[in-house]
Length: 353
Image (cartoon, rainbow, N blue to C red):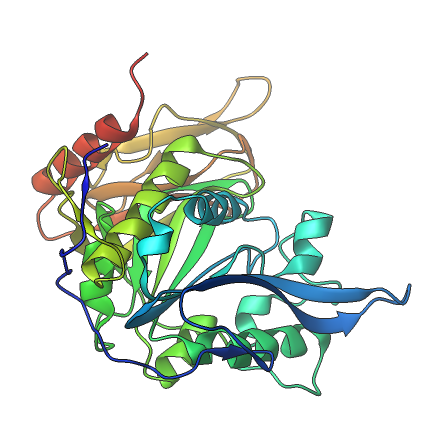
C-alpha cells in the first residue's frame, strides 16, 4: 500500500469545529474511540435490546460521518463493510468523527429477517417517536442519537427477496451535497431515486444532512466484490471529505454514470426462469432477457426488455410467479461508456483466477 499524505484534503473537505460530540448523554472527547450501547427497549425476557455504536472522534476538527448498516436485518454485506472499516489502521489519523452503526435493526439481524418483530419495515418508520411502536422507537433512537450528530451519512443496503444488485449508489440528486457525495463514493452507477415517505433518507434530508445509499449484493449472503467496493467507497468519501489523508491511486478512479430512471421487468408467466444475463450486462429494447418454462419443458415464454439500458439488479431465484420482479434495468443517456465503466469496475475488484 502506498504511503499516506497527511496534508491531503479532499474536494468535499470541511474543517468546521462542530463542538462537543455527545451520544446518549456521554461526551466523546477528541482523540478517543468509544463503543456505546444505545438502549432501545426491553425484551419480554427482561433483557435489554441496545444499538451497538462505535464512535471515533479525531483530534482535529472536520465532518462527522455516520455509516450505518442492516436497517433491514437480513442485509448483512454492510455489516461486514463496517467491520472492515473499523479495523483500518488509518483511523487514528481521522479528522472530524466517524459514527459507525453496523447493525441498526438488531431484532431482524438476530432473526435473519428484513423486518422487526411487529412486521414493520424500519426504513418506513422514520422519524419515529419515543412513545410509538417498536419500529418507531428504534427509528427515533437512531435519528436522535446518530443522524442528528452527523454532517453526512452513508447507509449500506443489499437487494432483497432473493434479488442481487450491481454495486450502485442511490441518492436524490436535487438535495444539496448529495450528488458530490454520490460521485465521491466511486460506484459505476448512480441511481437518481425519489425519496420514499418514512425513510431514513427523508428524515436525514429534512435535517439538511446530505446522505447516500449504497446498494450491492443479496440479502443473507456475503458478496466479496460488493463488500470490497463498499469499503473502498466509504474510504473514498472520507478522503474527499478531508477526514482521512489522501493516498496515491494505484489505478484511475471509477467514473460514475447517473441513471435518471430505471425499469423493473416482471415475469409474464409463472414457471422456471432460464437466463444467462449477468449484472452489468448491456441490454437493448426488444432483446430476450430470458425465458419462463414449465417443468415439463412443453411451454416457454420469453421475457423481453422494454428499454435500452444496463442490468443493475436481478432475481437469483429461478422459481418465479407471474408478476414477480425479475430484472432491474437502469436507463442512461449513453450506454457504451456505462457498460465499459462497469466492466472496468468489476475487473478491477475481481481477484485473478
